Image (cartoon, rainbow, N blue to C red; front, side):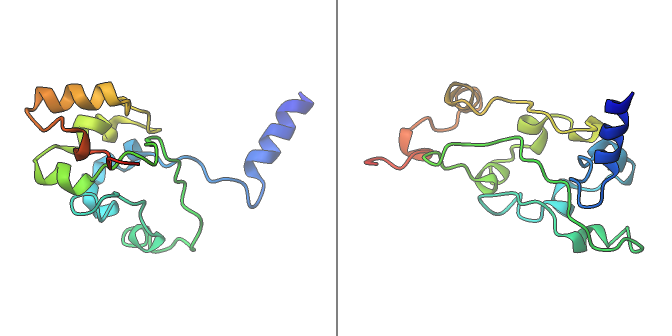
Length: 137
């Protein structure tokens, strides 16, 4: 019982990590991914939203840290561009799954090289090494 009370106190403690962001909770608003992830269709990285984006709807909220836990990580030697994939008409859900149904984001598609090569082959995209890797490193 004492352990449970300590756990509850830690969860409610000021300065504690915020609860994970729930896309599922926000699904009813039916926003495009790029409303919050501004650069997802144009840049290398999709970026996490700024608090000012949240204030568009949550006007009464005081500024606070946003729950932003990265799920997809690539090694430094891999170059991935959200913008290039968006320009090729790859939908966000192809890699991220049905995000609007996820209370907590979980990996939908592997970021291992074999998964990327398989996807490229399936969609008749280049599998040249230098498309994703800088050669000579």
